[in-house]
Length: 338
Image 1 (cartoon, rainbow, N blue to C red):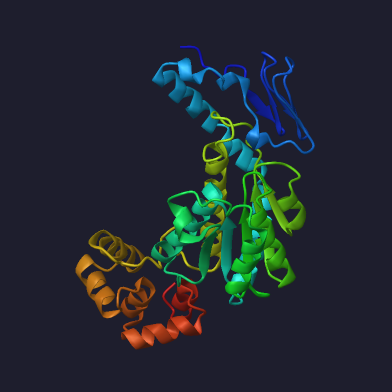
Image 2: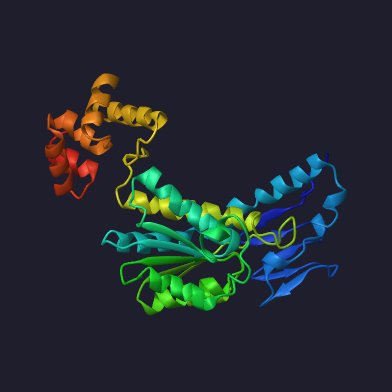
């Protein structure tokens, strides 16, 4: 079968097809046949791509290949936004290192993705659930069903920020594929008034959300396979960026050791085995010794490592760790092990 997106190429932020069906450059989107046109104010995420207008007549495998080919363009769009993503991460990490918190705020799919990323931080990085929080328009009910009018509640977004007491050390990432969700705009504006760091993540250029944020991130992925369904390419792009934000912030805060999840919570046997392997890999201890140290350390990997390497009890290892900013590498060097 012929590749449905033959002729598609990207270079320096430009997207072309040889058939003239789609052409984008410098924030404008055209088709030679007049099928699609957006310029300064129209939303890419709401457009209908003519290549997909008859997908309901195609075989299942061909639709799947079309979707897969469309999804393959998302990482390139994310790559173009990496400088903006990196600047936002450094700004967030600087505030969190001084005791700040991170909030994701969104509506619909964007809100669910923010809640998902926030909820993964405690089991992955051992954080307090209050450190990274996801806020969705409509509250918990909106995680599984649409809450009518929630996205349009600008005052609700501001109230969510006030209820959580955002302050000077906190950071808020407003997530909206369109860049126009009133709930998110209200939250971002309220956070800015309180002195919090503001970051936006959208999939349209020059959106109101970008204009308000200190660190605007725009990942322009173009029209969806199903027109307007931003849970597709836009949602994938948002998930990739959120992965970067939370993961790299936690790396910057010392909550990994190398590429190991050193703060992992051993809440089941699989994670207990992983923790045991980490302690063994770092210290060279056998599995039995590593597991014994972990049990004595209440399954804190960093404490167990220092217990083995410095022949310390749990309290002594915790004190050494605390004296070195809770960073294992610094504690090991201070202890003469590394």
